[in-house]
Structure formats: C-alpha cells, structure tokens
Amino acid sequence: MKILIIEDEQALLDSILTYFTEEGNVCEYATNYRTASEKIALYSYDCILLDLGLPDGEGLNLLGELKSLKKKDGVLIISARHSLDDKLAGLDLGADDYLVKPFHLSELKARVSAIVRRKNFDGNNVIVFNEINVDVFAMQTTVNGQLVTLTRKEFDLLVYFLSNKGKVVTKNAMAEHLWGDEMDIANDFDFIYTHIKNLRKKLMEAGGKDYLHSVYGIGYKFGAA
Amino acid sequence: MKLSSRYNQVNILTSLVVLIITGVIYYVVIHFILTEKLDKDLAVEENEINQYVKTYQKLPLPASYIDQQVHYKDAGNNNEPREFSYTTYYNAKEQEVEPGRSLITTVNLNGKKYIVTITKSRVESEDLVRIILFITLGITCFLLISLILINRFVLNRLWKPFYTLLNQMKTYEVSRMGKINREPTKIDEFNELNDSAIAMAARVQQDYKELKSFTDNASHEMMTPLAVINSKLDSLLQTESFTKQQGALLEDIYQGVGRLSRLNQSLLLLAKIENNLIPDLQDIDMKELLESKIRQFQELFEKDELQLIKQLDACQLKMSRYLADILMNNLFSNAVRHNHTGGTIEIILQKNSLQLINTGKDVGLNDQLFERFSKSAPSEGLGLGLAISKQICALYGFTIAYAYHNEKHSFTIHF
Image 1 (cartoon, chains in turn green, orange):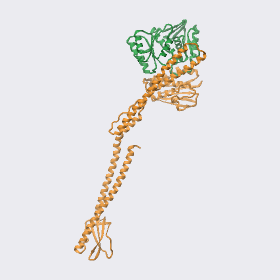
Image 2 (cartoon, helix red, strand yellow):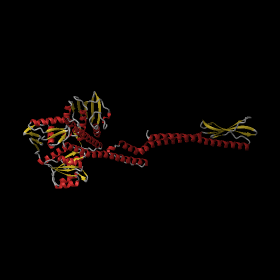
Image 3 (cartoon, helix red, strand yellow):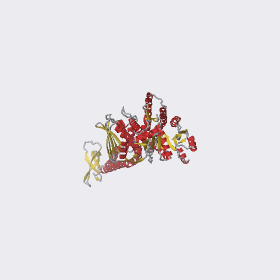
Image 4 (cartoon, one colour):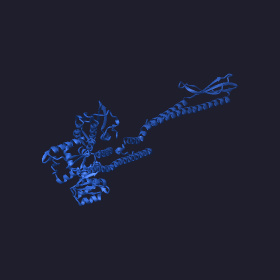
C-alpha cells in the first residue's frame, strides 16, 4: 500500500517510516503543509497519516483540499489534541479515523490497515495469511477452509496481529486496543495472556501453524517463526 | 449590622440628644427672658407707686388691675429688703389660682414705712413657654420621623447598587467565565467600586485563562515527546536482540511512559471539564450504560472472583456520553482495583441515585480521596480518577459521596 505521512516531528516520523516500510508498502512523507499539499495534489495514496499541528498551516485544511480534488485517499489524523471538537471536525471533514498522541505504532498500523481495507475492498474485507483467512466484515475466521469460532476479543486480537505481522506487539498496546485506554486497567495484563492462549489453541486445533510467539515477556509476535 | 442601620442608630441617637439639650437650653433661656420682662414690669409699677407717693403724699389705692395686684402693709420697724419671688396669683375673674411673680418693696410715706407687694400673673408667660416647648417637641418628633423615613427609604435606595454589586460578586465564578455587570448609579464611590470590581474580575479571568492555557499547552507539548518515546520504544522492540533482562527493563520503561501519558491525558481532561469544554449533552439511559459497563468489566470481575449484585432501575440522565463513560469507568475500576479476591460489588441504580458498594482491602478512607493525587499507598492508579469523577459530577450538579460501612466502601452519586 502507498502511504503518505505528514508529520513535523522528525523523530516520530522516522519511527513511523521504519515501522511501515516493509515489502509491498511505499511510504512517503512531508514535514510541512506546503510539501504535503503538493504531494496530495500530485499523487494518490491508500492512506494519509495527518498530524494536525503543522509549522506552516492547520492540518485540518488539507482535508478540505483533498475534498476539492475529489480524492478518495483514506485519512488518519494523528494529533496531540485530545479534543472531542477536533475529532468531530476532522471526521466531519472526511477523515476516516482519529488517533491521539502518544500511540503505539502497532495501533497505528492496525488502524491504517483497517482504513486501507475499507477503501480497497469495499465490503469484501478479507485478510489472508497463509492458511488463515479472516473476513473482517462478516467476522469469520477460517483455517484451511475450516471455520474457527472465536470470541469477539480473540477475533479483534487476531486482526490486530495480522495487521502487525512480523512485529513485536506489546501487551500494553493490546490491552489498550481491546479495552480502550480509558478503562485504566494498565499493569494488569493477565487477561491478555488468557485471550492469546485461547486464540493460539483454537488456531492450532483447526490445523494452523503456531504463529504466536512470546517476546521477552513484553509482548507477542505473529509470524512464521 | 448593616452600615445603614448602624448609621441610622448613631444619627438618631445624636439627633435625639442634641434636640433634648437644645430644648432644655431653649426652655431655660426663654423662661429667664420672660421672668426678666416680668421683673421689669414690676419695677415699672414700683416706680409709678413711688412717683405717686412723692407727688400726692399718699398711697395709691390698692387697686386690682387685671393681671396685677398691689397690697400695702405697715412695716413697723422691720426693714424688709427689696426682693422678687415666685408666688401665686388669685385671678378673681377666673376664680382660680395662677402662678405669679411678686416684688416686695418698701415706700416711705411721711416717715412711715409701708411694705408694698406687687404681684403679676405669670400665666401668660407660662403659656408662651409651654407653646414654645410643644413646638420644639413637635419639631423634634417630626425631625426624628423624617430621619427614620429617609434612612429607611432613601438610604436603602441609595445603597441598592452596592448590594446588587455585592450579590454579583458573591455568585461570581471564575471558571464559568461569568461577568460583572455595571450597576447604573450617580454615586461616585459606587461607580468606582463597580469599575474596580469589573476590572478585578477581568484581571482574575485573564490570569485564570493564562493558567488554564498553560496547563493545556504544557500537557499538549508533552504529548509529542511522549509520542516520540513511545514510537522509539516500539521501534527498538522490533530490532529483537534482547536478553530477558533487557526485556524486563523495556517493559518497565513502557509502564512508565504509559503511566505518564495517562496522567497527562487525565490532567487535560480535568482542565477541560473545569472549563466546561465538553458540551455534547445528550440523554443517557443509565441502566443501559451500566449494563454495557458490567459486560465490559465482566472479565475483571471474573478474574478476581468478584460477586456482582446488581439492582438496576430505569434512570435517564442528561450529560455527555463521553463523560458518563469516564465516570462509570472510574467508579468500576476503583471498585475492582481496591477489592480483594472473592469480594463483592453491589451496583444499585435508582431513579435519582447510583450506589456502588464494594468490599475492599483498605479500611475507611478520609474525605481527601476526592482530591487530586490522593491515593492509598499501594494503589497503582494515578490518584486522579476520583478527582475527575467529582469534577464530572460537579459539572452536572450531581453530588458524589463516600462512606464506609460494615467494612464496605460505598460511593453514592445523587443526580
């Protein structure tokens, strides 16, 4: 997929670029409004990561530009502003999602993947990973064509892992993804472990390979060994 | 005591004393003047008698004039001194005894001494004095009454701008960005007070705004470096060549960063609630919300083997869904976090109150638990949850109270 990252904080930009750059992905970036505006006009992207506070302009205005260009690029706003107004304004102006800083890169990736899936497949939301087949829209998982019944949380976890395949995902990030960061249950990741254990068991019982690996006790990695 | 009534008191008391003293002085002086005049008349009469005796060598007839009586008496060898005195006067016409003034003097007639007593009625001068006294008293009463009336009505009206302003200042709340209105008055002092109050309110508001925006900006500015740290940690984790020990270090850093960003978000949220920046009012079905929260927390309950007792009646509230969510999250997390394994949580929702009762590790807590950063030592929370809950309640005029009964903690919100 082709992604444009508009972010003025160089260090954060580097991290995102590194995390997103993998086979099949093309990442471009802009560190100010002017460059971003030019790139948006010249090219089309599957998803644009948009930071609202740019040194030479208000990020929200780029949404207006996109609209007037009649572009269908997906837009994910990443902002330090945890304000409902900004969020609603952004979504009203055509953004697809809103993520508040600081965020986990895995969460960012999952959200971007979700946007890209929605944009590209228009209802046919199927993620395929080797023998695993996940229909996000119908919430159905099959392994080797055999239906696997997952709980809501296990399903969410699986989609999350598939969006971040090959990456180490922290328990912290998973907890926030599953329960939301407002639930304030940090430091208590026992249940993550339970859900992962169950997910892994169900996938393997259906004939899947063991793709879930624990990493240093911090998190998990989904991928072929 | 109000200034006006104190002023009234002093005013009326002083007026009364001054008027009484003036009255007394008035009475005495007039009395003195009138007696002087009577005495002068009596002296004139004496003079006439003397002239008469000198001219005709005989005593005039002890004639009784109106208002005046003359008596003669043989003095013998007594030498009476000449003197004025207060006596009585018999008014034959009216047949009554009136107060009088007498002059006793002696005349020499052919070498013989006679005592002459001239008496004049004092009734007229007494009447005059009495009239003057009544007039004075009347004026005193009239003055006092008008003073009281002036104080009551005019002063009250005069002070009205002051009290209006005072009320405005009493109800003034800087967080609500209220305004103090100008109270039209012609009194310079009140105008000055009004201006000062308005200027002060503006200044306080400005300071408050600056302080708020500082908190706001500081928190926002902190978000970016936090985002950098977080993303760098995520990136670092992908490089994958850590020992178990390094992994544990990383985990601790993650915890710290996570905590810091939650803390930051909580402070921002508090500032926002205080500034009433979350309008988004809507009807909330509390029963539905609570049921969804119970589902959301189900796993947490199960993990700690908590027994849930719920009694949910229908309840509708008008508030922000976002804040309602946070409020419930805070209360639920507290009830779980401070519970012990195998404890209970009771949730009682009534038409205008919500009660959460949970067994707990700690003994009763003090009222400071709603303060920011107040938390029990072993707590893993931020110490902001209840402060936020209280702010949310305050925003919508709810009251939240804590109680400790039968080794159970209970939080009650009255809507």
